[in-house]
Length: 610
Image 1: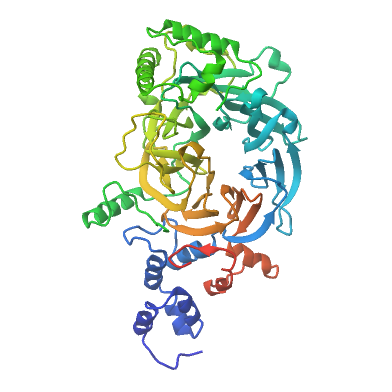
Image 2: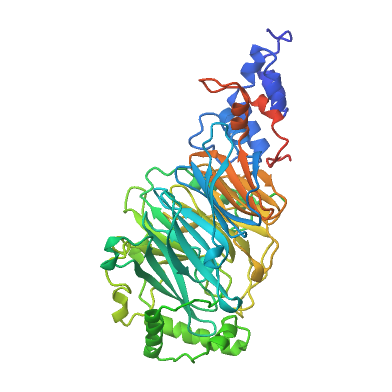
């Protein structure tokens, strides 16, 4: 159909520049001329920056082939359409984990079950439950975390073990996915260490020893996931590290990052360009110093038996020090552990003694182990990441400890060579202070970037009492840490909120795909951001707190969310929904963007307009 108006392309383009994108798409269906103009790259560049409210100094994604397709990617490929609600759990659902192939996932809940296998490969697209196991027979209170090993043959399940006299601690169970049998159980203290896989057959757990009111040491153990015939002659457990904790802090939330040379990262983030954009904005007074580019939407001692050698070693180490710790009975230690029965002067004195002991009995860090490398230099590195602290009991730091190749097996001395040395503690190789209460961590698929949920402390606050941490913000900041350079990129993401105070904070699990990052929140929504542009693209609604989200490793257009409303919701992209509803074809449909306008009833889009 020819245009009867006879307007030149330049005038049509000028008119389209004043229209919203949906109107442009509809106008493009009028005639060949308008269709051609409606695909103009300059037009879609303007629509892109205007609609998503992205600073124009931020460049287009390096992998994008056109502004039109990039607009369509952010609009069409976000898993924001609810397609299924799973109600098999009967209490709060705390965590979700996909297998590495993406064909199965597991879920943990306050109902003390682990739904080990959910099938995601049914021909009709629906997700169904394959197997469920209850952990109450092992005196667990609930299951809280799970993780598949790298070849998807074993499942690590972490939970809270209920001991005598209403005490609680942690425990890890390893389950076989071939026949759903229990292979081993490992103590894990405190329970929010969670635990993680180091490789296909070995996992990491923790144990906590209090040696004073505010001072403790955490021992991180390498455990073999199962005992085989050779186990009579080969160790199934080995100590990795012993780390001193001060000011009532403890190590929590361990995870392993296998950092390669990053020659081909899964996402090519243009940090230099964004840093220049930030400097330019600061010069014009748009941002305060160090403020990121934002798209702003508005423990216990219950163990059945103690590790005798570890306790003896702690005692021997304490006797070697110039300062001696007083001996506490278990009942008194339970109170002292929370710092409720000591004066501020006593706590300050203990902190000084702990610092003296640590400085004299801690190995010096080897800076070469975590020296940042250029993309073409260096070697593959394995890092142990965890939350910790030095000023208060609230976790406010990311600790990094490199695991050497000879430490990745349980062969050798159970307690390592350190037992016979004067150096009692292991030092941290690197520490990143977040200046706030950390409530979540997640790795990018290539393990280059660490994303951290935190609730910030007030600017300039001073902590004088470790038992009285600063108040925390309701807004959750999502930090990005580059594990290649070992520095935080000043590009925080923000949209989600939390409301619990310091002493009631709980973990909110996040997940990262190739292009997106998602997180739960206490405001009854999950959130999805684009990793390159730092914009929040969608909110996923629940009826209660969203505790966990998980992308499918096989398809980032499939996302799961778990909530205190006892449900797991399945979200797919508008593109996938449209393809599932269209007649089966051998070739993919290439319908244009205007066909998406009818798929906005089940979610909230966050791109400038609700």
